[in-house]
Amino acid sequence: MIATRTRLDRFISRETGINRRDVRAMLAQGRIVVDGEVAHDIQQIIHQFSRVSVDGEILQDNQPCYIMLNKPAGVVSATKDKQHKTVIDLIGSTNGVDRDSLHIAGRLDFNSTGLLLLTNDGRWSRNLSLPENNVTKSYRVELEEPVTEKYIEAFAQGFYFEYEDITTQPAELRIVSERVAEVDITDGRYHQIKRMFGRFQNKVLVLHRYAVGTLQLDPALEPGEYRELSSNEMTTISETISINTT
Ligand code: URA
Image (cartoon, rainbow, N blue to C red; front, side, top):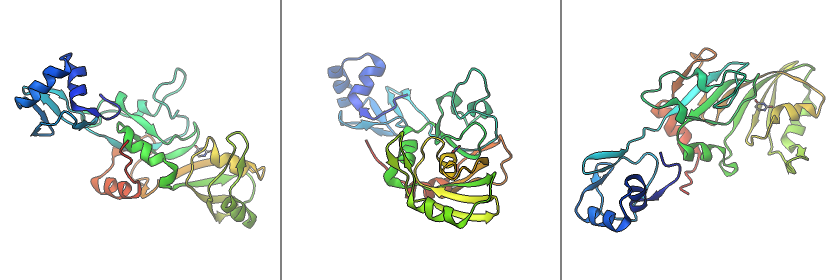
């Protein structure tokens, strides 16, 4: 599978070992088909989900796959781990897509729960995490100490993180009850929510992500369960992330 975009002649040459001059001749003879159309332009750009065949033989036919998983606590947001179960271990069959081709779009800590997105589409996950796309991640947080009104202003102002030398984007905090809050952030720094509450010496006891942009965790999914995103969900989330084509 190609991770990035490449020119058609380069792609065919790399996949078949045929030199690029001969590939051009094959193109002129109408022997190369891309996404159901006979290809004519060597400069045509091929991406990881272009269906490409030569003389009727398929060189590439990858299906994009977009999954929402309800991550349970005690599972690592990684594709491999020697010690613990990973989120990939929770994925069984995915409509013919190889689960080892999946990667995580926005990690959750080992004990955090909730909405985790998995995909084999690197462009989509990159766009989801681009700061300029301002995708909101929404969390429900249970705390050791009471949460007070002063948190609201501090979260909205942002916190300076010395290690990264950045100030976090304005975050919205809503007090739900004495020790429970909801927080929306648009950035996604390491342990960000825990570090933000850490500024008040208030320990996060439970952290649950219930939304990413327009995607809400499906309440029908029990912890550890997953499903593919619907076409409606794909349309609405794709409208909020401008597609960067590089
Ligand atoms: N912030 C955290 O501290 N942990 C998470 O898992 C997600 C956001």
